Image (spheres, rainbow, N blue to C red):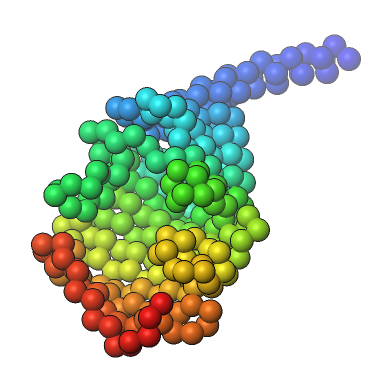
Length: 273
């Protein structure tokens, strides 16, 4: 019995440094993630981080705040990631699933490059993040958009992928509304920083009283099927557009964006919306 108790004590004493190292490592990576994503006017808080020593990790919540409070919350997140890449300034995630992403509002514009630039003569530009982000597969059970973003509360289930780094943006999203309103959204977009080359492929299919009909101020707010496909440089961009309401085609043509931000629509149908 004495030998058994002695053996247990020895094993426990040997395990203590390992457990302490795991806790120190977890705390270090938690701080590393917070520091990497935080910046001027942006405070990131990570809670319940588990799995620091594994390629599979999870956390209970991540919140991002600015001077006006919390604007983004992620809850119950599980990810398969390359944690060593974080030390090299990259957040590489093979697969990420989240029970909830709550985008309560858009962040307050700051000078650190993360937030969306204000609409001025400077033109379009991608946000500059303190780390490169590459999420190969993203699954979100509930994606909430606050009322101030689109003019009404908006809830989606979403599958996506996204890469945002020094080269540019490459993202694809498939989503459907889960808030009692029917709607499916399929969007892919690519933008190259160095050449300003971009492409977009967008399909929106909504039932009556949907978001697109409201934003386009279509009388009666009918069902809407909208398609946009285009490619080119930002100052010489052409997109093919088709719009149908209540299963009847209303518009088909092309829109050109030029360097002076003017648009040149070229419709090949005379049917009014």
